[in-house]
Length: 342
Image 1 (cartoon, rainbow, N blue to C red):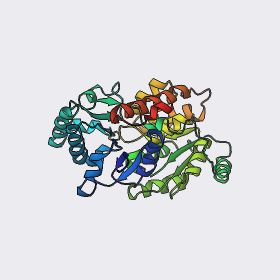
Image 2: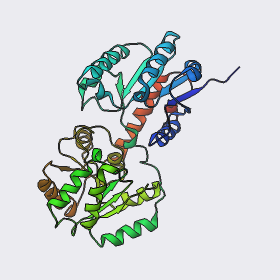
Image 3: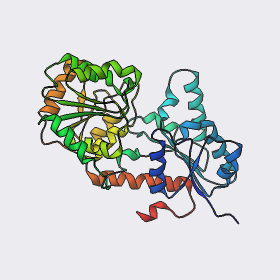
Image 4: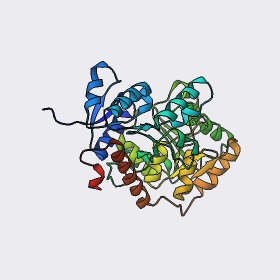
């Protein structure tokens, strides 16, 4: 007789999906199932004793079919809804998705867990059965991460006593890189006082901007940055850029890592999700206006001249971790509960 399976299903391991799957496997006691839902894996997913879809957004149709089939068999299914706000986008596609999840949220034994807090977007209560805090707000709070000491020494030497503002990860317009470029151009006196480090692969839409940052005296590393290098840059930084394009108003791993590591996140003044978390945690985030001259003044006063920064309480982040694991346990039901180990 085959052993009961406790599965985390995820479409692929590209981008951040691999580390995300590893995180959920570690904290929720599951093993990975990879690939789109189809004939080859439908039976296995149907039979699994415990099943969670790590990113249901990647295959909404597959999640719905599997969850409904398992519900008819009396089995529970949970899914992490990473972008539930897409149900409220204008147009036919948003309307159809909203109607689908309005119905699905009422089906017994199906749990759709919003990765965005209901307090920040109350309308999400109609399309999700619950909400959990993004794992990237709590996943490394107790980890002793290896740090690239050579890179840390290099960037500190380059800063020559200036505070460091880091733009980390893939460099593109969606992450607000154009705004950073405009800020530097608006105030040429800023970079002599603030060391700007751009570390990550530069996409085509940002090549000219990266060249402008380098010309203004910033540091640009156009390459993939390892985890140890990222840890070194977080350690060195006074401010970490999370001031993304208005269309990207959702949870941010860069923001979450800054919160966990006690570094000051730099966010858009009207950002709903990260702004909600900054307020809720009582941290001193730098909130930038859309106007580059006003934004430059904020960076000068709040990063260059900053002191006595309020950071997040680690106990709160650990409680959010416990709440996440309990919500997953409740959603997928039987088996050895991960929350029993907390």
